[in-house]
Length: 447
Image 1: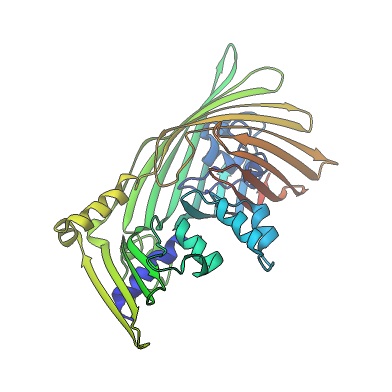
Image 2 (image 1 turned 90 degrees about the horizontal axis):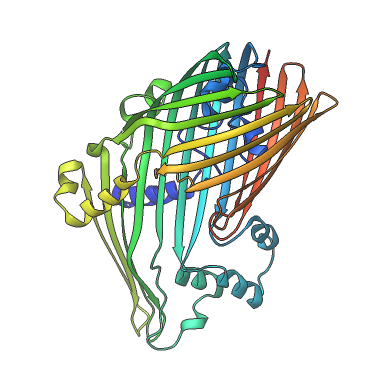
């Protein structure tokens, strides 16, 4: 297989590999997932780096906290919910089952996945840092192609009838972020006011976009299949090997570079009530080295003549580097589409929390100010609760909605043994926009 074809396949796989609330900085709090994200005024210790840096200077914060590996993974689609995957995963599909699955697809079946890993976070007093790596990918398959996969070619085997893959696409990105947070408290007549800031350094590891341009599959009068598409993505040398963290966060391993600044404030009122606000990426920018972009245009055709002889033709063209892509109108257009959302979103969050003994209640509203790679909904509201049973068994639940078509239900538990915090959470989103399941697990220490 030629290198150009291998790279095209790699670009497609990027969109199928390892999105709920997520960003370029993975959430270091599994507890937040169990409360549907209603956590901006509840975050403790190292959790504040992601949710609201001002929480570092609020009362009842730990003196020292350490976040050990925290992982969150999401998988979903715009057509099928978790129940569909569970119901049909090991079943022999009847025609009625196939028709049900096809009817769930509007024009394109989108599959998406997100993986975030925060291997280490640390908080000491009013200072904290967190490091994490995240990747988001999605792939779309046109409805015609879904029908062909479900029913085969029997439903369109007449003369002149054919299938296409129109609307099929793929997109993905991966990045690592190192964040530092600091907060200061101020006494005011209303209570205790805290202000905080998080500074983020971002290393982009890759970004890519692929689209189908033309396709047709027919069996009558002769078998004919044609497929054409193009992709643009961050290119790596065939012999690239990451031997250490320096190879990942420098040189060829980081073709993207960016920064961000989050601002937060929290006000602790009387009787256990806290309110807070966070502006995520108040200042920020993300850029990608266009000299590292590779553009592939591939066309493949298979034809069977009446005699039974099969002929196949592969045509491929690759452009490497900024000048070559700039000089090709089609390649330049796809590159521009990729770069339209190659930064990270700017958000504003407002939250409130109330603590009564072992019961903690939280609420949050989030608004998206600008779109980005991390694809947050335009608005999101959540409420959640946590109760620690017997002082060691936390029980969490939450509910969230984007006021459009998505409803998220979440829950979580764990085991708290002194400073050791083991937590697991799951969130299930329904609706026709972003249905899917997100799971998380993590361990931390709080002193």
